[in-house]
Structure formats: structure tokens, C-alpha cells
Length: 326
Image 1 (tube, rainbow, N blue to C red):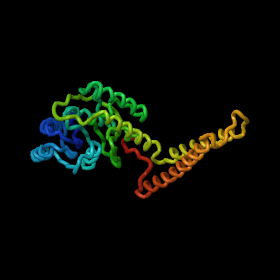
Image 2 (image 1 turned 135 degrees about the vertical axis):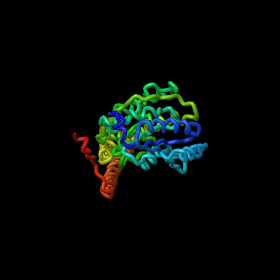
Image 3 (image 1 turned 135 degrees about the horizontal axis):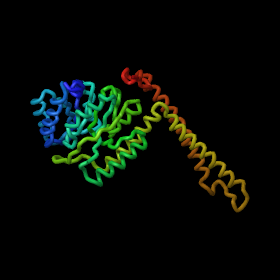
Image 4 (image 1 turned 60 degrees about the vertical axis):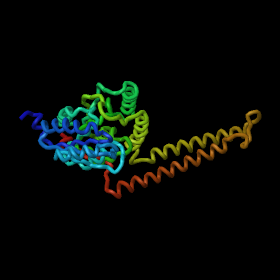
């Protein structure tokens, strides 16, 4: 038995979110199961039907009846890719989890090399669609710009956050809850917690069946989610630094405006102005109120954070595994 074969004796869960992919499901199952049976001793495929409105449910039922390794989870409505991935991860049984799309643009043949990369000591291996087969402007260009912005803000240098084809060690995902479009930020979360993250070029194929669910509005959602991720990473355990900092700035600006207002009042003509001749008194009051409210909101946020951690016994730190310390 080769080294790679021996390593691939580890059990594997493959999670696939599915939304209106009726035409791709039979071929996807055929290609994916062929690869997994050839490379892994034991595995499961978890297909999450995210409220599909076509014949995807029937296709998945037929495939699951034909293949014992395929498990189907049906969500009551379309919750989005992130929620579907979380549902699949929650139901995964094995210590290595691979996620991929159902549109056959990800190549199942890349899964063994992603898993092999995990055995080199990494915790997350992210696929990189170096030669993307999508629209040059609306998909490729916007994706490159978004990826560079995400890398700049997060400090995690990856070329392709949007590639769903990724491999994880299960313990990296434990306790991680994702919302919005945040599934693409799992490598960032993991890296911030001390996990080893790397990237591996993977094949990418043009879509031949079905319709893409991505649009330019999704890029805007990703940028907003990135703001949330950055806030949670930097200030989740100390929100007073954000709200209190903003409050202090507002109070300082209120003081400067007050000095400016007094300056107009005490100076002789032609500089002299009565309070009622300028909006400065209103600006002073508004900035002072905003500053005080921000400070109070920061204190409420601090109480909320402490209640969250202490009521659930959560830790504000992550321990290394034994193999990490080697």
C-alpha cells in the first residue's frame, strides 16, 4: 500500500449544498462516488437540499436509494449556501470534512490531493480556481478584487475565498456558527484561532447544466459580511473599544465645537456671532448625546459578551492539539 493510500484510510465526509441542480445530480454522484471509492476506505456524502424547486429532491431520492454512502438532508425552504453547508457539517460523522458545489464546476478528482495536503500538517486546505471558467468581467474580475480586499483586511493571504471546494479537519469547525455569506470566511476564522491554512490549485470547469445562482449583489453582501467578520475577530470580547472609542471621539468633537462656539461669542465684530446665528449649539448637543449613548451602548455590549461566555461556559481562547505542539 502506498503512503497516500495509507493516509487516505482516514474517514471522510463530503458535504454538498444543492439548490435547483436537477440536471447535475446523477453525473455528480457517479463521478464523486467513483473517486471516493477509489481513494478512501470509508466515507459518506451528505447532500443538503436547500429548498430546491425543481426535480432535485426526486433525483437525490433515487441516488440515495442506489448508494448507501449518500445521505440526503432536506431543508424546508431555501436558506442559502452558508446555512446548507452548516447543516451538512452538523450532520457529518467523520474527522475530515470536504465541501464542494453541486454544479460540476468543482472536480471530484481534486479531493484526494486536498486531503493529502491535510496530512502534511494543515488544518484547512482551500481550493484555488486558478483558471476559472466563468464570465471574465462579471465573475472573474469582481472576484479578484473581492479576494484582494478580503486578504488585505483579514491578513490571511488566499487567492480564492469563493471556491467551495475545501478540506477541513473537523475540530477546526467545532463551535463555529456561520451566517449570511460567511462560509467563504471559514479559513479566516480558522487562521485567527491558530489553525494552519494553505491553498491548492484545483481544476474548474464551465457550467453545462442549470443556472448560476451568483450575481453582482452577492459581492456586495460578501463585503458587508467581511465587516462583521473583522469586527467579531477584533472586538467580539471587547466591544467597549469600538463603541467607547467612537463615544470618546464624539465627546471630544463636541468639546471642540463648544470652544468654537464660545470663540464666536466672545470675539468682537466682524467675527462675533450670537449662538442663535449658527448651528453650533445644536451640533454640540448632538455630538454629546451620541458620545454618551455610544459609551452606554459599549457597556451594555460588554455585559452581553460576559453573559454569553459565562452562561455557556465558553472560553475566550483555543488550546493547541498535541500534534500542534510538536
